[in-house]
Amino acid sequence: MTDKLITCKIVGVYKHALTRGKPYEIIDYANDKYRIIGDHGRRVWVSQLYFDMGKVLLLHMKEWKFDDEIKDWDIIEVTITFDNGTRRWCHMTTPEKLVEHFKNPMMDPPGFFMKHLIIMKSLEITEVEQTLRYLDSQGELEEATKPLE
Image 1 (cartoon, helix red, strand yellow):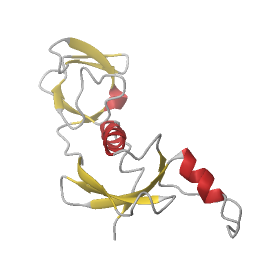
Image 2 (cartoon, rainbow, N blue to C red; image 1 turned 120 degrees about the horizontal axis):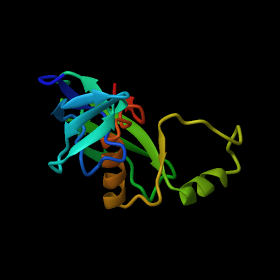
Image 3 (cartoon, rainbow, N blue to C red; image 1 turned 135 degrees about the vertical axis):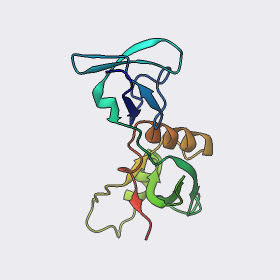
Image 4 (cartoon, rainbow, N blue to C red; image 1 turned 90 degrees about the vertical axis):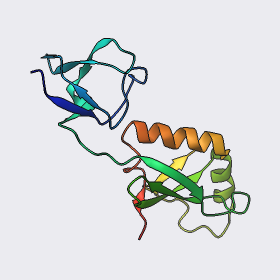
């Protein structure tokens, strides 16, 4: 099984040993797990679910920006640019901003569903950056966003 490459598609709990999008050489394979040399220089067994076969190019977040003034809106649009130039967007809010949103007496119906809504502890730039980078490392950022048309 040597000479075979696999590409990490999610980091999971192996942040110390894996990098999303990085190819790794398979050292061994058993019980649906690959043995690889991780980023920390040690051999580690990792579930095959963390990898795609071969050398695969994956999208990575390059940058992001708020599209709305966070003080003016309860639900903020965010645009994310990926390393291949594609752009996607999502909504962000905080629990406090959701409470304010539902205080509007004109809200009809009295509830809503948003597939691409990320609820944050705060909308501080460092916390948004950390959350988006985490979602990217887990391969969840594309699912959490919509293509920008």
